[in-house]
Length: 364
Image 1 (cartoon, rainbow, N blue to C red):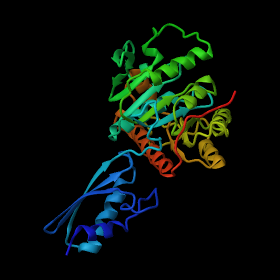
Image 2: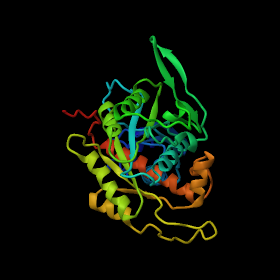
Image 3: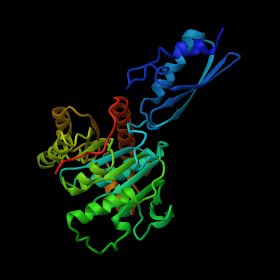
Image 4: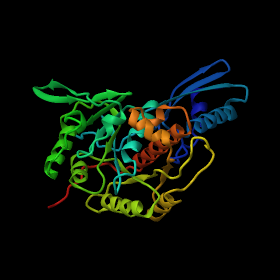
């Protein structure tokens, strides 16, 4: 006799590969329906970008057939509810589940390119995504999203004005580049730049988001401290290139987030420009900037290497044309899709650890 109890017993033997607990105890099984010779149920994943979704589906099918009979038709519906480690009463950005800082030790490593493509890849997986261009002095997100010249609207709520983010390719985004003419230099002291970032966070109508990516300026500055002292950051991603100079600066960026008074988790490292692949020789790799630097850095600091992005002309062209490379259909796009899946995976693992995100409180 097939009943709900039998199905739950079967699915209780299926382990979530990352969280190392069974799907039933994690509350991931919903809406069990039993018909003649058929069982249907929903598995609620921790992110729509889960790279192991098909593995979970196959394991569920096998477990049910083992308990209910090999002839039973098993239909597994997959959906997702992105997890969060935020406290329920957080006053700022209450609808944002995960705030992810994208940082680099030095400029020129492709941090904004990685951020833009991550945002689009996460959105295309089914997530709600926002992006703040916190590089006040060198905003590039408007160009990368073909949004130059756009200006955000303003709405009123409870008598207060709020900025409405620009929406492009499904991403909600805000940048100083939308508020200042593109040919004007932003000549501000640190406190003014920090104030602008704070306004992007506190005075903007972000709504409900699964992931809010923060494209930070290079180095370690007031902007970084303002971010971690204003909102609870889920974790940081460090972007580097393989050569020694970039790796040395990346170490400094990681050291900042790991300072005891800051203590923001490092979600992982992205090695950009990892190798050069000519368009006419897609199977060839030339390690122009060195080989294995990101891997070695990840090993030294015991953090994941989230992905290696090749140096190809198409990525540069896509950024210049305002259409992130992940929107194409080639090996480069797949590299960013894989990166987004692995990042979402590690965000879920971090959230399952039970450590709540919190605003950093630093004494003067």
